[in-house]
Amino acid sequence: MLNGEKLIRRPLRWGMVGGGRTGQVGYKHRTGALRDNTAYRLVCGAFDIDPARGKDFGVNIGVDADRCYADYKTLIAGEAKRADGVEVVTVATPNFTHYEITRACLEAGLHVICEKPLFFTVKECREIEELAARKGLVVGVTYGFTGHPLVHQMAAMVKKGILGDIRIVDLEYTHGFNSGDDVGASEAVKWRTNPKTAGPTFVLGDIGTHLYYLSEIVLPHLKIEKLLCDRNAFISTRAPLEDHATVLMHYDNGARGRLWVSSVDAGNMGSQRYRFVGSKASVSWSDAHPDQLIYEIQGEPPQILHHGMPYLEKESLACDRMGALHTEGLGDSWSNIYLWIAEAIDARNRGDEAFLKTHHYPGIAAGTEGVRWLENCVRSADAGSVWVDFQ
Ligand code: NAI
Image 1: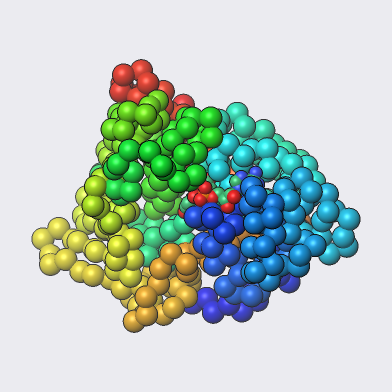
Image 2: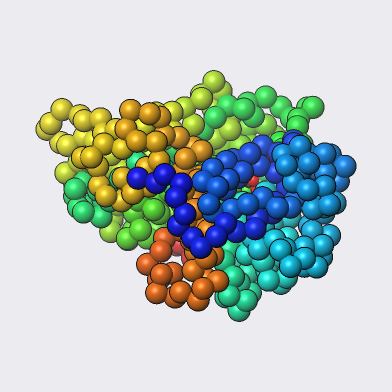
């Protein structure tokens, strides 16, 4: 069980680009990074596209006024002049800015934690991977629920063979918040539905990459061989981007996968649902009831496994924060993700290659794989929803 004790030598000096007062995801980053008080200290930020609002916000959450910067360039330049300058920067801005901000931070010698979808193309991911490796820096990526202890329970059960051979992978992330048209839409919807600012996809990148990365955590041994993606814009002004998509996947062990993402699933508040079916048993988990894992053995009554209980696998108990009986949710998951990235940064700074070899955290490979999956989905969908080999 994690209780916030020190796991790295000292808290990292941390800054944020984006994630300000009007940002949807900024608070989740601060929840993740600051919960333990032993992994990160928020020292600076360029929190907002509007510099005055960003400064006002930064001061209001306790950042020194002279370290609330107008933009990421002045942040990098200003912090470079200080002996106690920032060491790691989170990029929580719209998709089209991820690549240039990440590259600039890495070139300045700063570690980066970047939002998903990481970049627009695999080519960009590879360039950044090469730059980070050359500089000896970490790039972390934040897939929100993948630090939840019951996700790691599912992974441990699959690894131990408790489910048998994996046959069916069923993944859904749907909501109805974009069921209506975009007249008068918020800035967050406007940039998400424009290919120039969102990239080659809307819901596939926005929510599908979460499903895909979580399935990779649970099934690291399975690789997709081919897929078929069907995408559609029910609100036609969003085309060529999609507000709804279905992806069928064939895995290298013969397993079959189905993934459904939608932002026009009117009325649904269930959000994320995962089911992994093996030859002996299945597990299902949903973020609507994150404390519970449904474990079904063929021919036996279903069981509900609760987070934090001693009957769970050690991998799950090791990242539990709240303990059984008390709810464990998205904030706890983000805290784990941030902690695992902090441990990677600390190890990188110490040159501890042995630690890094076995330490699991969502790094550049996780971000790249998400972008690679998106490229394959788009290639399939735009060729008329045909099967394509996974490249
Ligand atoms: P948003 O539109 O709600 O907020 C964007 C924020 O960035 C605003 O505060 C805006 O003022 C600021 N901003 C924009 N350009 C900037 C710049 N050049 N410099 C400094 N600040 C700038 O967007 P949202 O929903 O917060 O999404 C941001 C990123 O986070 C996206 O890449 C999105 O895909 C991702 N995201 C990830 C989630 C997760 O669970 N991991 C959840 C929601 C979003």
